[in-house]
Length: 73
Length: 233
Image (cartoon, rainbow over all chains, first blue to last red; front, side, top):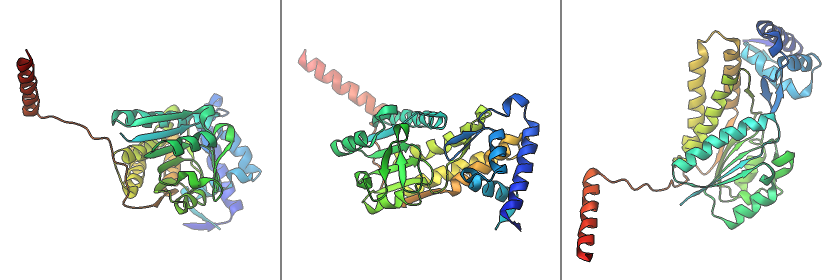
């Protein structure tokens, strides 16, 4: 696994989310898809929150980066 | 007959899913012959929970709600349990919490207050709801833990049942090409790694006893019945 910073992890996760979004029908992109910490989010919500470093999904970004094969500092 | 208490507030989208998962748990409890107390929606408050735990002998408690490290909430996110504040009401219980983060402080505190054992999550409990079939693994993991408790499993057996169900789902989804399957695997992996079990490793809920008769036993019972009837006639 490669060790990366949170800023790098965020960019990788955002790229992954955008790729996933691109595979989804447009109508589904704003539909609640993920429940994180018992709060529902659409993929568009997550992209917006990740872009602005929202604390409520920071751990999720770490987890997603880890799942993509990285260790976040 | 042992009693299982289910605590199922449904005040938002996330909880509406959990409420359905616990409904499956209730079916399993009824099937096994448990008495069931089902607290739903506005009944999911500290006062109701306390009254029931103090007035009835409850063998197992399954609770759904929002949580953070030291607080578990019920209806409309009212505080139900708070570490080192009111969690002594859980003393003497075997419990499973479907909630986020409470494994960090609240569950250890419950065990300090003589809770027998408990299973919950020290991380956030995350899942997917779209497409609809993406929910199934998370429902199954919850149900696996509940069923193991109801079957008289000890702490590790119940915990293992949840982990095993998660692993089973990961394997099942591994070769699927859809993107959501990879996302679900990621969340299952995170959830099962965040599942903690604390407390007495040897305690268990004694399941209701079932009376099973062999064919010979049934014939014997019929003969006895016939004998008693004929003597009375």
